Image 1 (cartoon, helix red, strand yellow):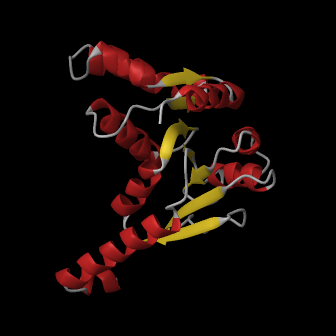
Image 2 (spheres, rainbow, N blue to C red; image 1 turned 30 degrees about the vertical axis):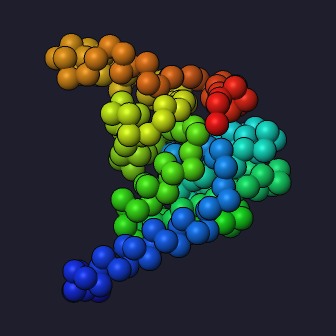
Image 3 (spheres, rainbow, N blue to C red; image 1 turned 180 degrees about the horizontal axis):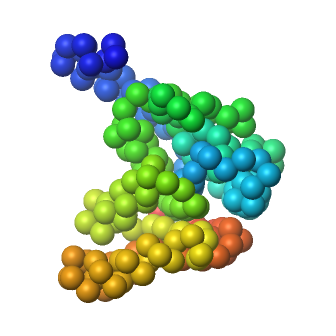
Amino acid sequence: MLDAKMPEAWRVLRIQSELVDGIERLITLKGAVTVFGSARFPEDAVEYQQGMRLGELLASEGIPVITGGGPGIMEACNRGAFTHAGASIGLNIELPFEQTPNPYLDIRLNFRYFFVRKFMFMKHAVGFIAMPGGFGTMDELFEALTLVQTQKVRRFPIVLVGKRYWSGLLDWLVNTVLERACIDAADLDLFKLVDTVDEAAEIIIDYIRHRED
C-alpha cells in the first residue's frame, strides 16, 4: 500500500488534512444522530426496512442523520432521511471490500483512517443508535460507551435496536463483565436496549427536545 511507504511526516499531514476537511464540511451541522449497522443487509431484509423507517422518523423532526455512508443499514438510514428532505451525511472509509458510498447522501466525506472518521462520528452527535451489525458496529458502539463512561464527551443517549440480536451481548456484560467487577452496575445505564426503531427515535427525539445547549 502507498500509505505504508509514506514518510511519517507526510502521513501526519494526510491525517491533518482529513481532520481539517471533515471539520470544515460539517461545521454547520447541529444536533445530529449517528446510526451504525451492518453493510451486509440487502434491500429486502427486515433490518434494511427498519433502517429506512428510522431515517424517516429522524428527518421528519429535522434531525441530521450520520452513517458510515456505505450499503446495508447505512444506506437504508441515509435513504430514509434523504427521501424525506432530511440532512443525510455519509462518512465513508476506504476498505478492500463492502464499503462503497451509497447514493443517498447530501454530504459525503471519504476517510483513510478509522480514528479520524470515528472522531467525526462523535463530534456532531447528540445521539447514537446501533442497529444489528458486526465488528465495525461493535467497535463504534464501545467507542461511544467508553467516551461517555470516562466523561470525555457529554453524555448522550446510546440506543441498541433489536432485543433478540443484542440480548446475548447484554447477558455477557451482566453475567461476566459486571460479575468480575470490570464495569460498575451504573455503566449498564449508559445505553438502552429497545426492540423497534420507533422506540429508538422516540428516545432520541425526546432527549433533543429537552436537552440544554
